[in-house]
Image (tube, rainbow, N blue to C red; front, side, top):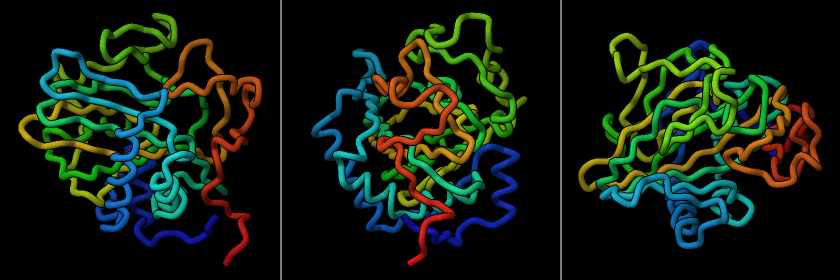
Length: 278
């Protein structure tokens, strides 16, 4: 573990992240690190895990696929999680004494994919509670404004909103009526503070796990491969659910009690204020 803090992030950027729940960090990854991520994604696609899923319909002219939790078997993902500046940035944005890895996630939309990722928060689909967290999303292909992630600024301060299945809009997590519904952003986009950026390989966007976000498809001949890391801060605790979470950690409720820190080999500490220097 390292206690080195990346010089990229200013106090103003930290304030912006706290207020808006999202921050763009241009050029976070070096060319070598982008190449490493590409190699990891290729290895993952060639050998998918049991968590691999197709998130587009058979009728889609493209294809949208995802996979999760592969850092232990794909060395390129482990290298980026442990040694890149991503964890340093997360540490500064979250504050606190440590950064713990929650999971890695690849998201690949092939050319011509029409599948839309609907507006959603991430945290209600997870098995963790708490406020000190962030996700990092980094493309290894150029991403235009029409295919990039879009975020609703400040939405992370609303608490949990109703999570629904992406393909058929079903409430498969929290029961109907117990959480407020998401706003109809697409019905009146001009009424909302939507943040988005065209991105180049090496750029990364950081966002709170409760920040509403979405993405359109990938028209034309462009491929959109992206790698994500999810980070947990000091107050994040296990929240076992009576349903399948995304991703699912089978049997974890027998190893970590509800309300306890995520102290487990699956969730290693990447940065710590108590780690020895050198």
